[in-house]
Image (tube, rainbow, N blue to C red; front, side):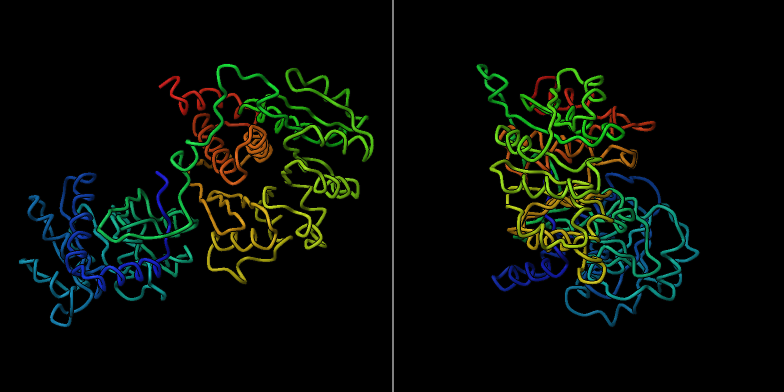
Length: 480
């Protein structure tokens, strides 16, 4: 859906701006609580709802939701973390909407219920749950949370201690980092975002075809292969050629008109025995590589290339050429002792695709300096001066100008050897067709995730490229 991602602090600022412009804050709370109730009732339509209200705005949303659920003929029991006479402002107004009994939070522990509505604390929580709140969080069962499951920091996407594990979460205006980044995302369940009349501005989004489908490559009726770009992939030695072939085949599948594996002479026969539509060219020295790069739109270097001085020299040569370059795996590792020498050579349209270990060797431990993975990737993109794709279950793509996309469209079955090589080929294949690097990375990551979902259990990396034609056909409306 391409939903915006905003921090809890940005959401608070957006709300304050709306209130300052004249919108009644209680009206906004009423919209939020009503959205929560309708979300819960639509997806969990039966049984007693146990509403747990906190002392602030989240609790106010809970009281509004309770009143609305009662009008939808749901049996509702309400429990509050504080005496309701101590509530002030909008929370007090919301509590007045509920005309039933409000019991202390302690009474919720043993009370019968089918669904818990967790309206205790929102994503701005900065301390661990304790006491009865912590006990309720660890109770298990069916939970629907307001904003972010209580006990999770919405900004850092980290559990602060005991926390609720929700089957569904209703948030407002946009997603929070906790909804898309691990480990917190695993606690959020199905996340819906309601429009409550608070406009937000952001440069971070959840990955979706909405973001890149308008510019994805679409060959015209008169197109021929040379118009669809030439991708070249550098192979490793004879004992390590498979990674380059995975990348090359993926690039061809995703639409590059021509794909060539650039092979060391000693690996030519090995590569030749496996390649058909992908072409093969022997490369023996810097002059050969320079000549090959001159006729490519994109070159991929790194998959099983070897952690050698030759790989480093090849990277440095390619970054002097006019072609865009994708650096992965060994092409990054060879710079781990001197990352700045790599950063000064990278251009804004190049891309590096590290996993967490490779990232740490280039940029340091993100846990020591950044609040979450989005900011980690943004900082790296600024420092490296190119697009950065930081891999993981919550892959983040960041551009030097601050734009960021988080991919949640994936599956754990992608955690297998060669999966990253396929992703590199998909990105480069789209780049070869003229797609901007940032959007190509986002589209390729989504395709990669969708292919993984379609294969499912038992996936090996060779399965992924075979799914691409059907997925592309659906995106182009050819097999809807």
